[in-house]
Image (tube, rainbow, N blue to C red; front, side, top):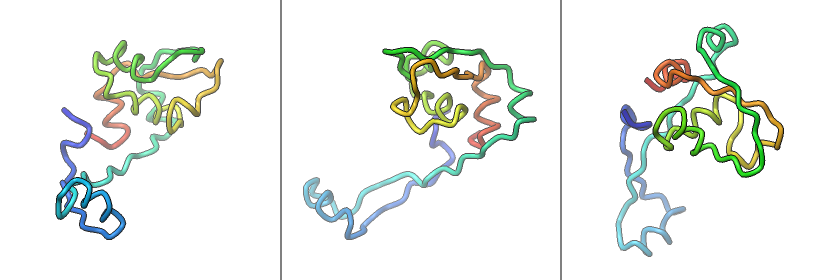
Length: 112
């Protein structure tokens, strides 16, 4: 199951993207509909088993996703679960909670 499986593919002919369209030689750009993720309540988060990871220099979210989910594309689940936009926002020494059951985390985030 991919991150965008249930989202529509939209065509964008906005003037904003005109230089990009001209560069690519296309009349429109295909984009996925923006997913709307939930912010799970504390009660929902408590029901999902997590493990702790102490963030250190050199860590990467995609490596953690690969380690725990066998798929680096789910880096964003760990980021969203912990309230970070990207790994650049995570300070050394930060404690991350990694949901161990990916399906349960995706359901809690409203994606599955």
